[in-house]
Length: 115
Length: 114
Image 1 (cartoon, rainbow over the protein chains, first blue to last red):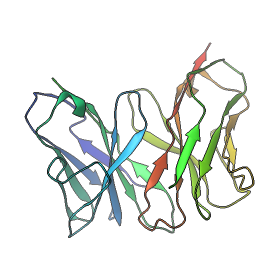
Image 2 (image 1 turned 90 degrees about the vertical axis):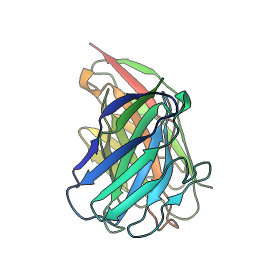
Image 3 (image 1 turned 30 degrees about the vertical axis):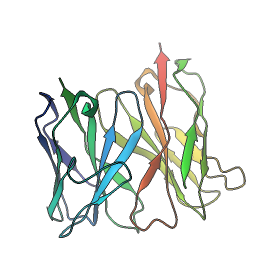
């Protein structure tokens, strides 16, 4: 398994500001992902955080709005930029330890409210 | 593309009742299938998984069988408890997806009353 922590656990932000969410894993992992869960909705993949290279974004998500860093194999950040109330969601980090385990583990999430 | 369809909720049950949550999928090849659970105010936890046809995943009294012929992975529990109240997500990982990306269903809220 993997133990994943996220900071902050929740935040309330003003429109137009930016928030950086941190994700820390207790062991080196190959793949790290960022998901968004809008109120009452399922999870949508934002991007795959690649170590040492630019993140791979899903359709509908762009780097200018959701810049991602992955400086090493245990840590990643997601920034939500120029926030609006529509960005109010839970943001979840997840990790995949490799195809042999075929299991993805999730962090506790960051609950973001934008006023 | 790959997709997952779950029965809509909320599903409200009495304690000790039988629970079934239907999940069907569309995918090429042989995907891996998962059930995740999200308790109130918490993140997602892996509940069980199955990686090939006819496999049965089980955990905490929950079971689901990978049915290739019906493209289904229904979740069942014989006797639910109040503590099983949560949102349950069915998900798949495509066999052709080397990046490990998960496709989630919409989620089914389950409410168990004493």
